[in-house]
Structure formats: structure tokens, C-alpha cells
Amino acid sequence: MLAQSAPLYGVLGTPHTYSDNGVQVLVGDDAPVPYGDPALRWFLASQLVRTVRAFTVVDLNDLAPAL
Image (cartoon, rainbow, N blue to C red; front, side, top):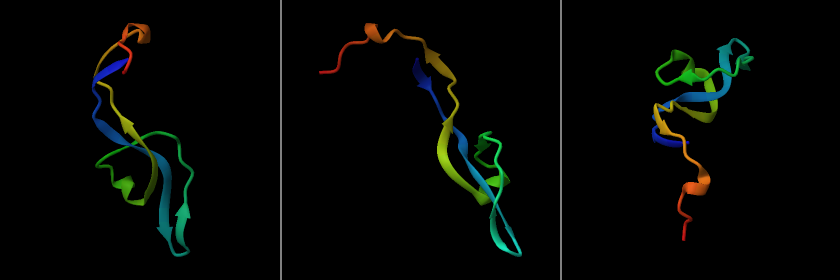
């Protein structure tokens, strides 16, 4: 797949919260959290997520070898 447009969408990681006992780790659901979401404030990101909008399926054998 040759991506022509793949803007950043959000992140994957571990949600946290702040309570009387300090920072607590929460159970995540492995769903990406989009940029702009208020939950990002207490989120420890481990991976970036992109949205692939325009792409072409290619055969790797058809691509020119890198020199």
C-alpha cells in the first residue's frame, strides 16, 4: 500500500487519573484517543495513529530497487 495522504489522528497508550492518592493507572480499551480529546491530558501515549485517506495498492516486486 502506497499512502498518498496519512494525517495524524491520535495516540494509543495508557490512561491515568489523578485522585487523593496521587496518579492512578486506569484500564485502557486499546482504542485510539484522537487529538483534541480532553482525555489526552492524563494519557501516556506509546504509539501514534494515522488515518490513511488516499492510497494505492502496489506489488513490491513492481517497485524499482533502491540504489
